Structure formats: C-alpha cells, structure tokens
Length: 319
Image (tube, rainbow, N blue to C red; front, side):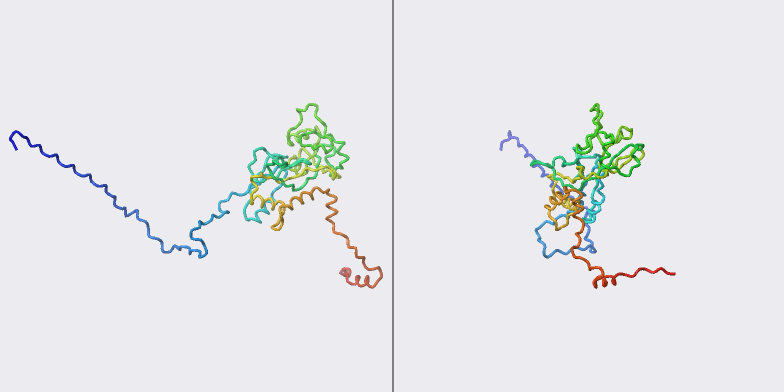
C-alpha cells in the first residue's frame, strides 16, 4: 500500500434491537384453585355428548296478554289459565265498548260485536284474524235517574216503543227504532257520549246489560232490564287473535277460555258456535231432563203400599 492512500475505517456494525420482553405473570392475577366443596353434576349417561342443552321455555318467558273491552270480565279465565298452566295471564283493559282499536298490543282480544256481525278482519278468504264467539248478552234500558220508569224492576219489550230512544252508532237496526237527530252532527259518537245525553233528560238508550252496568252513573242513570226480548238479535262477545299469532300458547289460551279439555278437538268450537245460534228457549228445553216414561204404582196396590213404607215418618214435635 502506498503512502498517498488513506485508510477508511470500517463503519461499526449496528447493534441488534433488544427482543420484546414478555411481562412476568402477576401473582395476584392467578386463577384461584377450584373449591373442593363445589360439586360437579354427574353427566347423564343417556345424553348425547355433542348435543347442545335446550333452554327452558318457561324461564324468562313473557306472559300472554289478554285484552278486553269495557263491560267484559276476564277474571274467571285468568284464574283458570293460572290453574291450568301455573303461569300468570296479563290482563289489558281496552277503552272501547264495541270492536277494538286499530293499534292493539295483546295476544288475544275479548271484543263485543253488534248482532249478526263478526270481529273486523275475521271473515273472508283474506282474513287477518281468527274469531270464536263466546256468548250473547241481555238487553237493558238506561233512563235518567228521575225518569217516570226509573223505579221499575223490569220492562216488557212492547213498552220500550213508548220511550224516546236516542240514536247512536251502536244501536242495532233490529232493535226498537231510535229517534233520528234533526242535525246528524249531534249524534253521539261513543256510548259514554250517549249516556251523557241520557243524564240530561234528552232520552234513553238500549245497551247490553254488562256494558250498561259498567258505564252508568247510579246518581244520574237508572237501569231497567228488558223482558220478552228473546226474538231480538243480541250483541255477542268474541275472542279474536291475529292469524300470524296462531301459536300453541295462544291455542292453549283459547282452549281455556272456551272450556276445551285435552280430549277436545278444535273442530268442537265450530259446533259450539252453531249451538249458540239456537234460540234460548230451545236451549233451555233441551237442557231439561226427560221425564221418565215408566208409570208409577197404581194407588192402593201392593207396590204403592211398599213405596209408602219406605217414606220416612213425619217428625214429631217434642212436648
């Protein structure tokens, strides 16, 4: 190497980066030792080891919600449901006298319908609700508290024609005629509005008995049951529920409401509905037990004497 050449010192090698250090485990965060007192449930020998355990359907389930219109008492069905299922039934009063509101937050609705009418949406091929008729209602005349008939315990249907009846949207056409309003805008829109007019002395109205009992003010109104009204069509109470909500739990509730047992079929509801259309007089006649066709012993015969001996002797008074 010549003297005019300068020796360039080699660059120092870069120091290697220190490796990332793994933090030492915290002794306080260690998993506690298993409790020897805790017992592990024994495995079921018949269970599939790969199967996922099913959830309990009763745990955290929402109770069924039963809506009901005014004048309908659902307490009996609620008690029967709790007896059968052991679960409570949520009752939801709905502030309507007839039908149901457009927005309804319940699984089953107990609603009232005018004579020869069904719940809305429950007829036709494109129906949106199922419906079951439960019972028909009796008729009551509501008059002002100071009316001349207010003290009557009952009133024959033929006498209702002598009373000034106020027209309202829920007065059936087949009932005794109501007086139309001179100005249609005066027509009350609801049953409470009609009762408010009755209290002023403007007239009287006909209502289903339980609805009248629920809505009248005893200080302002008097209720008079109407007799001899079997030929009049009656309002009816129905149970209705949405078609898409026709699940086993709803069907069980409908069975409890209808009184259906485990041996009954759903087709029985149709025959029961047809039976309710039979007039009340015929139903009462069919319910009476048939008289025995076997004649009794002739008076004075041996059989009559034996029958007389079986009778208990009259009770003697103590002296």
